[in-house]
Image 1 (cartoon, rainbow, N blue to C red):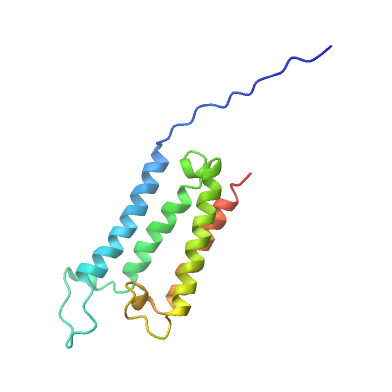
Image 2 (image 1 turned 90 degrees about the vertical axis):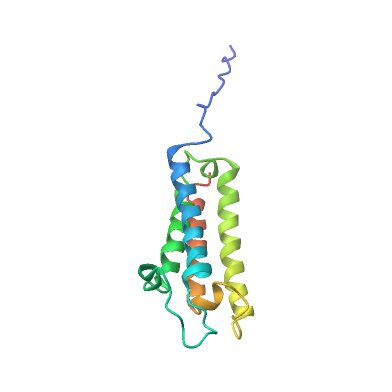
Length: 150
């Protein structure tokens, strides 16, 4: 006697969840923080003497602004690896993993290619050797996606 075939019905998952909105806010906030610092607050290194940057609270942080910005961006990306977000299930995991790996690799390769003169590259010129840390951090976020791959 043949067994009846059972159909597997996957529960419907929402496209937008609280976790996904939080991740988007962190990603956009991190990028906005770095852009605001680089374009609005950061003193121009070509002008001597350097003018006083405003707002002083953000200007005093210096390179920590990049740590805040990249930290928010990378934490936001890591949060999207959860199955309740679109990048945390199905093909999204592979897309997120490969994108993070490639961005990290391209970041490091770009740094090495232009390491003699980083002045024409925004953000790269301020970070110096910390560009290696940024590239490795993107690859680490790629590994958070890799743990979700089935």
